[in-house]
Image 1 (tube, rainbow, N blue to C red):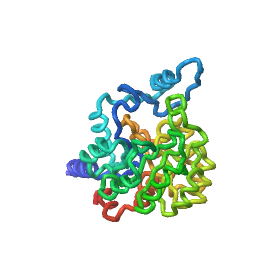
Image 2: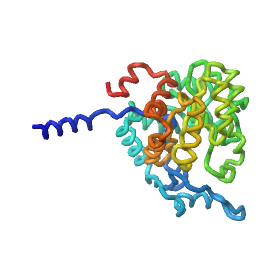
Image 3: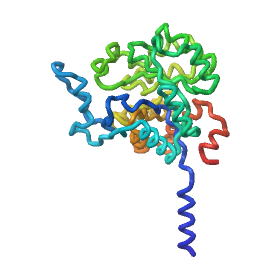
Image 4: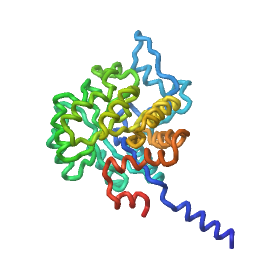
Amino acid sequence: MPFLMGLIMSAGAAAQTPPPIIDMHLHALPIDFQGPPPQTICAPFSTFPAWDPKTDYREVFAKLGSDPGCTYPVISPTTQDEVMEESLAILEELNIIGVTSGPPPLVARWREAAPDRIIPGISFYLGPDAPSAEEIGRMYDDGRLEVFSEVAIQYQGFQPNHPEFSDYLEVAAEKDIPVGIHIGTGPPGSPYLGFVNYRARMHSPLSLEEPLIEHPGLRVYVMHAGWPMLDDTIALLYTHPNVYLGVGVISYVLPRAEFHRYLRRIVEAGFGNRIMFGSDQMIWPEAIRIAIESIDSADFLSEQQKRDILYNNAARFLRLTEEQIAAHHGK
């Protein structure tokens, strides 16, 4: 009888809902987003490239994932369906809710497949093909978009204070749409990968200051946590208490010691209540697990601090209702 009871209790424990996680930086992207599949990425990198400019940097970059120094290469699936299915399976297994950006038709497809797991966002660049600020507002009104993220105009050489972006921020503030802005790292060597206007100085989160003052109702989070501009990031958080951070991509591509050093400094500066988990999973579903492990393995964080980063801070930022939070906890 005790043995049978033990089996029953074990089965009950296994059936329990895992503590929820909110991934503030998930993507539904075309399978060839990074080139012909399969593509490999180091998770994490141990060394970043040293490049001889007499060679083609794109070829150097393409080989990074197969470099012998890459101790944990992650290989992408080969089809669009596999990326979606593997990603959604991980979300279901680990009880993850993901703010998901990408082309609207792909985001809609992921949401249709897992409506309780996907919070729809949009991949956004300025230009003639971009939806207007009014269209962003309509997408929010009709439920096609809940978070205006990922805004990646840094790749175009634009900062958040760019005049063409002001109308979008005005709509976001007016309708209370949370905004996630790419401020921080892109691929190493971005200007030599086709992003000719990308500049390192644009990593600074201080570029958000004027928009925050001009649009005081904004809910904004800095994607990639402004890495590596640590002092600027802390200065922004100190001066603007409404700003949050997401740790997408740096949570799995940076050398673990560097990620932990950066994270620890922000926590010790007093801003652990505004750090939100993000994976920045693009076409590598396994990156989600690795990003979570980078938080779980941070021995300088208490269990409560880990739960804050993995769920509680994002729930507050997104203004989730008590009913939504209860549902995420399986209640």
